[in-house]
Image 1 (cartoon, rainbow over the protein chains, first blue to last red):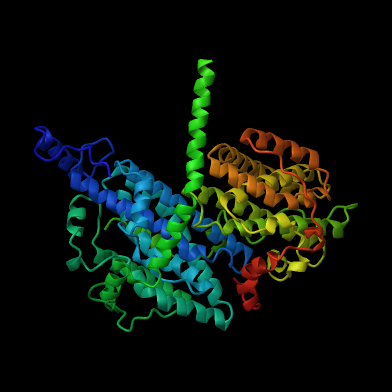
Image 2: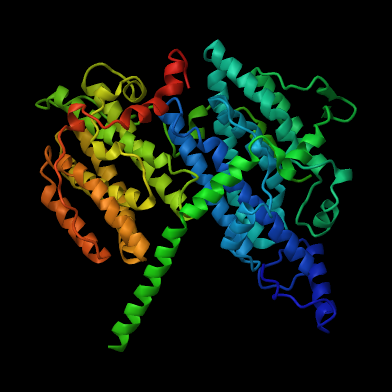
Length: 328
Length: 275
C-alpha cells in the first residue's frame, strides 16, 4: 500500500489542525473524500476492510458460479449467470474504491492469493445442491445486506457510494434466491428436502458472517468511532435473525436452532450460540474449501498473466507507433 | 437504528415473483407478440431453423459460462458473462418460437434439457472446449462475425417473430464481434507468446470453418471481416481444412455429450420438478 499520502505523526506542524478538521468532519456526519487528510490508521483500516470486501465478492463467485452450467432451467441459468456477473462488477467497484486510498488492485490480488488478506469465511463452505443457490441468495445476500446497508452511510465517500449500488443489487439477489426456494418448496418432496438440507447447512455459517461477538471483536470500537462501521456485530446478527425468522415461516422450513424463540420482553428473537471455534478455524484457513477457493483464484490469475502482458505490450507498441507517426 | 425501512422492505412478501428476475429472464420471452405463423411461411422449416440457431447459441453460452471465475482479468469476467447472457437470451427466444411454430407448444427447457446430442443441430465450432483465452477469442471472432452476418439477413425474414429476435440479436452480436476483434488485435500484436497462441488457436479453429458456410450465403462477408481483423493483428488468414461430418446433421465431436451431461444433469434427475 502507498502510505505517502499522509505525514508521519508529529513530523508536520499542521497535523493537529488537520486532525481537528478530520474529527469535526466525522462528528458532523460528513464524508471524508480521497483528497482529504486522514489519519494513517483510518486509511489502513479502510483499505483492509474494502479489500476484504472486494476479495469476498470475487471469491464469492465460486460457490454459486459452479452451478451456472448445471442450472436446471434456462431462466435459472440466466438469473444465476447475471448474479455471478454482478459480483464481478461489485469486486471491480470495490477495488476501485480501495485505489482511491492509494492501494493497487494487482497488489491486493497478490495479497489475496498469498493468503495475506482475508475474505468472508462463508465462501469456504461447499455448494452441494441447486437449493444452495437459493439459500445463499436468501441467507448470505441477506446477511450481506444487513452488514452493508449501514455502510451506505460510512464516513468514507467512495466506499459509501459504492455500497449504495451494491446494496440495491444484493437485495435483488436475495429476492431471487428466496423466490427460487419458494418455487422448490411448491415442487416435489425431493426438492423440499433439498431446501431444508441447504438451510440446515448454511444457517450457522451465515450467522458467523457478522463476525465474532462484540466482546471478542477488538477492532470494532475504533471503526465505530470513525463511523466506518455503524452497528456492532451482535446488533447486526440480531437484526438478521429477526428479519429471517418470519421469512422461514412463510417458506415452510425449520431453522436448525432449538433455542430459537421470540422474546416478548426484549422484542427480539433469542437464539443459540454459533460455534465460534469453527469460525476461527475457517478464518485461519481450515474451512472445508479454503484451499480450493484460493487455488482457483491463483490459477485464474496466473493463467491470465500472458493475456495481461500482451495487452500491456500492445498498448506500449500502439503508443510508440502513435508517437512515431506524430514525429514523422 | 435508522435503517429500519430498508429491512422492512426486504422482509415484506412480494407476490409479484417474476419481477425479481428483472433483466435476466421472464416466463414468456415473446409475451404480447402475435405468434401466429404467417401464411406462406413453412412452419416446419421455421421451427427447424429456430432450433438450429438456438442450439448454436445455447452451446456457445455454456462454454462462455465455463469461463466464470477463470477469466484473465475481472473486466473479462464481466464481458464474457455479458456475451454468454446475450446468447442465452437468444437461445431462449428462439426455442420458444420453435415450440410455437412446430405446433408442439414445447417450452424452451424441453429443447434445452430433454434432447440428446444427436438431436442438437449446432455447428461443431460452438461445442469445442474453451482451450486458452486465445482460442476463445478466435472462436468468438469467427462465431460472432458469422452469426451477425446471418442475423442481419434474418431481420428481413417473413416470420415477424424471428425477424424481431434477429433485430435484437444484431445489436448484441455487433458488440461480441467488436470485443473479439479488439482482443484478437491485442493478442496478435502483443507479445511473442500471445502471437504464438493466436496462431495455434487459428489452426485449431480452421477445420471447423467449412461447416459454417455450407448452409448460408454469408461467406464473403465473414471472410472480409476476418481478413480485416487478422491484418490489423499481424496474423495470417486462417486456412480452410475441410472436415467430414456436420453438426447441422447431428454429427458432433466427442465434446458435445459431456457438455450436455453437465447442462442437463440436474433437470433430468428431477423430471417432475419445477424450478
